[in-house]
Length: 124
Image 1 (spheres, rainbow, N blue to C red):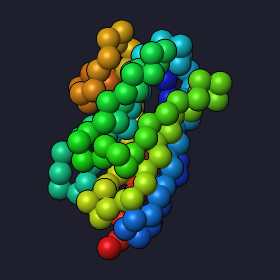
Image 2: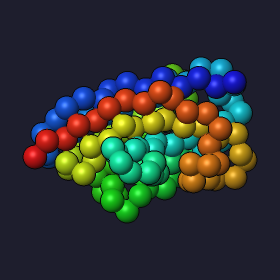
Image 3: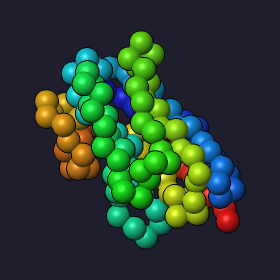
């Protein structure tokens, strides 16, 4: 089992920055892809960024490329999402997720464990 605990959400004005953190507990050595997803009210959950443990290969949604950066501190068992130049359309609940699949995955259905989420609100 893997437990994920997100933090760092909040309310900011457009153009501002936030850094989300995801502390991981449990069999973290068996997780390969870790990612951030988000879900806005009335919309489906969508992938934001994913990182592959070891190779550090990354994937970003087109809507956040150049503004968001995903990173991982293995010593602290923590996943991060640095979000810069935030826009109102970034407003959503952000979820951390972990996958036991050995290949690099970016689709929500391929992730096995999920955190409870942290809310991000961006005002114009």
